[in-house]
Picture 1 (cartoon, rainbow, N blue to C red):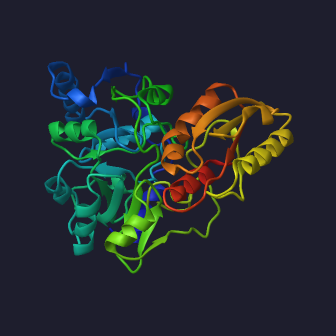
Picture 2: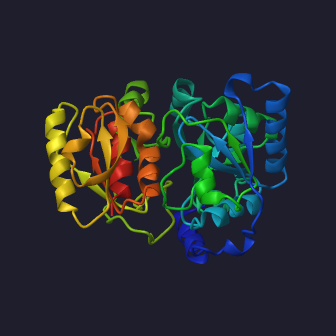
Length: 378
């Protein structure tokens, strides 16, 4: 499909166009023990969820990044139910998850040598590749564009569910569109209870931020969304990369279908206003972070202030902050990433109207943190 067709598809599919298909349902919460997947109880839960996927239903599933909201990627009506449940506009494409390279070959019409190299290096794992789509992929999956985003998740429950379902699973994050992504089953239910069929509860996710989205064609390759697979690791494995930079300001409505999930959008946002504290890096002393946060807290005196608090930054210094969330070690971006969305959701639930958050260094996994926090700030 050519670019003009993607624009035409976008014009014909306004946000909420499928909301009428979203009927209230009783959402089942099925616990799954990652360490004991093949016991009778866990196997029954996985088989039940797989049958629901094959029948056109919606299943929220854990991945190593965040919880995703899954549907049979080849079932157009089922994929449209994802958009209705999330109130997700049609111009935002979704990622398809596979359990094998044979399943990948059903979705795409060409896999370059470089893409094969990246697959060998990073799959299963948090890297999504944009590849030329096969004719069997519905337009609603790609927002009418010629590339489909595909990845193989590393989470044992996700892989086993897809394997048992026998179909590739389209699965954006399992939250209302634009809101903070879910890293627990409870987060999923906060947003989607009564709007989806099942959530498989396998406990908190590990990475805490979404996958990296990469177009492996071109020189350099293009990262459309920084994520848990770092630019440095991709470069070391397969060559130079560049981070996509939009010339447009962040917005809620784009002018055409997006080339990748989340590009150019205000996204990942808590209900509270997110206040970023900038000018910091991995070597910034904790005392300096504490001072900057205390100053920002005083400037928000008319708000119910919450704070994402790095380890070692003392809460008493934030006299104006009514709630704090213990975020993790400042020099451990993997901890900050894993707890980011849980912290924002916890401070929202505490009734905060403004959340202070120091902005970590941008290198490595910090690039994903920068991306999510800047898109969440309003």
